[in-house]
Length: 182
Image (cartoon, rainbow, N blue to C red; front, top):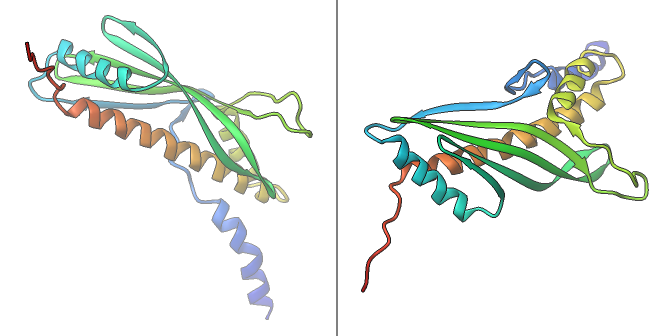
């Protein structure tokens, strides 16, 4: 019986102790992926990226060899016993060189929507959430908070990876040609 109780006490700690594959460095979370596209010029990659930008409804900065897109995603992240609506803002930069491009997802920030308990919400960076998770996961009495932070980061990770895959699909396909029907 004592072994069973000890096993139950260790079980939640083991589930929190699983590592997250989050690209964290220097207090920031940035996703970087370089993709090779054989026999494709920088200008063709730029055209494909512009096609993606035109199909999205986000603010954009276009520079000769790069495009920066700002996204805002609304998601419901589990926080404590209640669902908390969070606005996630992040930037995606697509840089071009001959036969390759680089996708960088950065400046990831979270802002809860105002509610009666938080009339003035505070924006927090993804790096701060990750740092809190790393500090809390091994502290006695902080495992539940670390579990919530882990779930929060896991949701963020999924959303960012979906965005990267979406961009890669657009960049892989040749740009549709407009038919001249005159």
